[in-house]
Image (tube, rainbow, N blue to C red; front, side):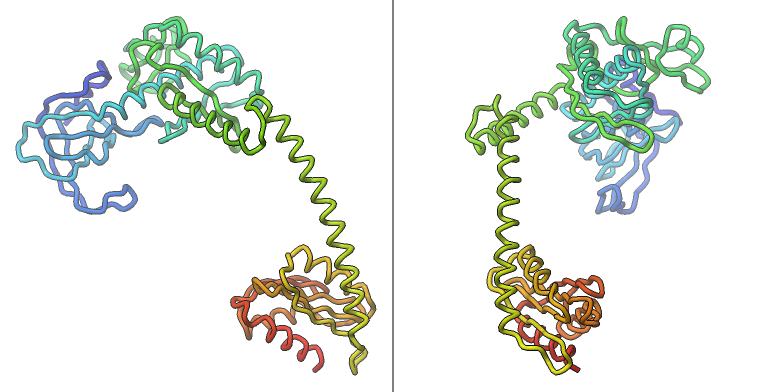
Length: 405
């Protein structure tokens, strides 16, 4: 059986009639999001596009059934529906907003890829049409901002010229002679999409009738993906939606910085510099305060019977940074161990002067075996967190007892 693909010649056809040639019940498929029974249909003709070539499938209805998935099976198209048709003669209806969105993205991709290859020598090796973002992977050196902006500008210029987009058929050799952008190693008659004086590319997807219907293209960013460069972009309605979203974000940032939108970059740079300066000041203040508190703790803690000084403290409202500063300051004293904890949160920090000769990591593990928690460290410095902060005092007493045995 061969399914006649109506979208090959008219991607704007949204309704059609067909005959069911095959129907089989399918079990639930959680990987595809199908939680109940479904049916697989093969029709003699179909306007539904199956997932293929980076473009997702169409959705819609066949009779009273909802189309859950459309799959390419060689010469046939499998339609996965949520109920069995009552009649072999059915009417299909494409969900147009999804179809047209995919057409805008796919034709926009053809044009963007053509501009990147023709003008900047960056061939496209793969394409993915996502639910929100589309991507192409480029081969070659990293495309600079100037290259991406230039390709975007050239693409939009052709979009605004509203050039015709047509379907051509021919063998791989014939299409190559006509200047096809990419060679295809397939026999027989191939389908190709031609954008007037801009691109010719073998493709089985759905496309708009003229570049003006793409609306516009917006190139987002470029990231490294293995040996290639992944470029994100959106077209048409997606570009409008994303541009509006970006502008709302800009306004929110400007409001938070108390500046005009055009001054966000300079204001943000100034704010970051101020934050870094304040952080350095705070860090210096914490270190001085921790050193002073450490000195008082050492003065008030006597040396134990084994010549070991054990400073044990539960600090109120102490941040992890302050715990670290306090413990570091105390552990500078010869043959001293510091056991410090935050009253809120159950953070523990055990540290020692190397001459103390104990193992802080082993000590922390022993405490956590009894009270629960996680963490670790080295022989001289270990940090962790108790499962229940209510056991903080008991945990420090246990650690102190273990050190004295």
